[in-house]
Picture 1 (cartoon, helix red, strand yellow):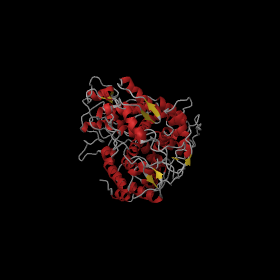
Picture 2 (tube, one colour):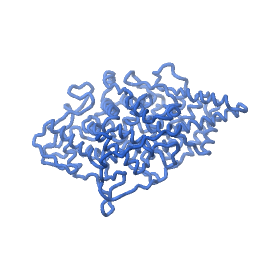
Picture 3 (cartoon, one colour):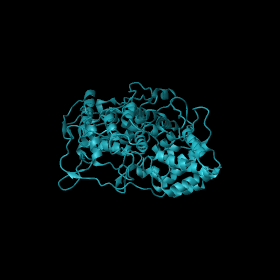
Picture 4 (cartoon, one colour):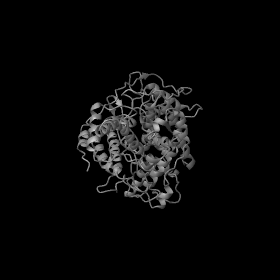
Length: 580
């Protein structure tokens, strides 16, 4: 049996990690101006392997071995091909026919299993990464009666519109049953003087669009003449928005799969009897006339006008653009970088606001994102779920079975597998499709050495130790012999490319068998770390410990098993947690 003593020892030494250097945010006073046309984003020329590694880290859920080496030119072409790549959504009708529904229970793991399978398997990787980003910005989780089916429909809508217009996503948030249940806009009654819930209206502004503060085009907070931050909106705007977005719900109060009168994509029904019927109100400086007896058309028209005003708000493009940069490229973007991405949001070159294809290209092709080498301050803290998917894709994991195609209640990543259960997704606290709050799985504002790095909140010393523990439970499953069929619930890591690298390196090494092995293990550790960390190198002390672990404690293991443990431990290193 593998002696994990040094594995645990090395994990216990992870009490801190190197944080990016603080970047001072600039502030300026004066008017917020929207540029009349977008600032051109130069298309950089790829400069080498590390830039390709970084690009694919930013644009995918994880890089396969050899992909970065094959992508030495043509980043724009790669993006265009990904925009055109077909995508297979979750087959919700099949899930309904198989008995999955909105009742609470263990089968609701099917949502996160379905999403996780697509993260790992789907060739349309840019769509998966952007969907992951969008799910963190417009955050929604199962709540009350809304669970498996509605959460799948919600995620399908996010994925389907990942390359669409941001306005479509905001309207989807207004109308969808899943969000309606999560933030209390379902059956929200503002008729006859009733006070509606303000939960959805508040988060629609604070988290999904404008942000709290009025922003300059470079992302800095606009200040008044006395140096105080200016607000993007006021409580009166929330009051008005909650009333104007009332009138949506379900005809029977609760939805079950296949129920007549419900939208198959998850949209709520219009219920004008719940709509606001009071006097005129003002939202974001625009007056909405009172309607004594609102119709269904009035409910829809109000929602559309509200979303149009939100999209036109001067902070929306800046706030959303900055979120995209921080969730794909770096926690500390420059003001010029933010300004260029915000300009692409404001105008895609054809006068269209909110075109996500323009935003994605601006984020990934910007000169600030590209380059063969980057300082230690560049990069972002990565989410634990993303680090796991990166490891699985890099290890060439066999395709994960889709629960919509077969009954996989014993799937290794759900809570029902093993004794004790493996439950990797649940224990990780970041199961896809089930965020812990409207702020997702970490605080919205989390400063690390002066840098706003929300995901870094997940990488405290106890969290790092928990990650080591999860890795220890994961590695034996992944190192088992490859399954004979693709229905194996645990999946298997093939690591065929790295096995070839290991064998070739060993054959080319000189010296005694022990010396050849030492040389080969060192090369393996260096390659895995570089591939998973954009070409960076680890500290000598960490490298020495890791090489000793793979060379000595894994001495009784076959090559494939050694490689599985190497990959899994590299993903637990502090440097891997901080920079992607």
